[in-house]
Length: 251
Ligand SMILES: C[S@@+](CC[C@H](N)C(=O)[O-])C[C@H]1O[C@@H](n2cnc3c(N)ncnc32)[C@H](O)[C@@H]1O
Image (spheres, rainbow, N blue to C red):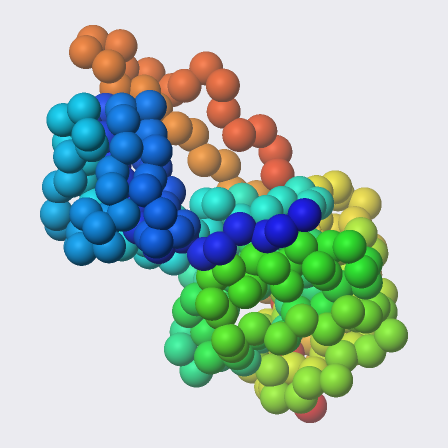
């Protein structure tokens, strides 16, 4: 199956309904009528364009988060609330070099690639690696390298700032991560169950260069605001995973 082109423009209706334009060389059809390709090609962020039926649509250029929201998903992706905690606790920034495993759909790698200098991401499965490669290409992220191999067999990189582990047996990657990290760097392990956390912490405790910082769970509670109905939504994101932070304190 052919993979879709990158999103070129976003059109939004008054009620918030969004339309994602991938090909500006063709007329674009919506439930409100179509917009001719000439009009589409000229439209810039901030403009309003009218369909042939007179419906006004507002134009904006896609940002990272718009394209990210349309990535193809293979295995379960990490929720944004947990990505935010990884960044906030480790201080990942424009000079950071990161190793990420497993890649899965590439959600975490993409987020980190959007703010860090370089991300190398390891994925053992060929089919997931293909999905992630496509997502990386769609978002035009040139600072992400995907390695289609097991992180349990070793990490090639050195002087790394952060190693993120989102895979079933993170304890098997502890020694490789410790070797890859610079002093002061972090391992962040993301696991849905407590036995995984315990085994990861036990493995980290055996390496005297590593210091356990903490294990946390991030709870996000969304509220609805509709006239006088002001309350937490009855359906919420339930449990996602525990984040364990370990720091390399010596060589
Ligand atoms: C839950 S998914 C990761 C999701 C990813 N963090 C995201 O946000 O899209 C776990 C991934 O780890 C991969 N995996 C499992 N064992 C691995 C290993 N030894 N080395 C590399 N990847 C592995 C799985 O194939 C799967 O794609």
